Length: 94
Image: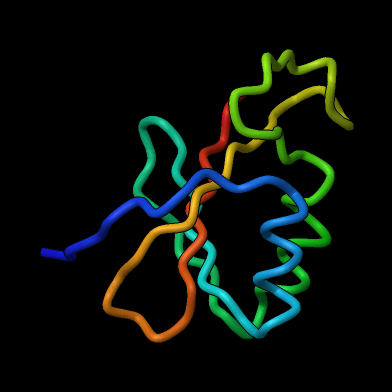
């Protein structure tokens, strides 16, 4: 069993600031699917390619049409785990 604590919801700027400090662990949470861990060596490419353009601000009222491709968006939160790197959980909504 993994012990985790949610620290805070993240804005785009918060994620970018964490990435400026160094690599992070991204975890994709999507209803009905197992958690998908993104290798920290791919975190920058994953951020640019997948998350950055689809990240909703915390408490933002979202519609799929508000984001590129209109198919999905993410909410992000920083979680504390036993890992040395920061862990960012991105919840995919579609």
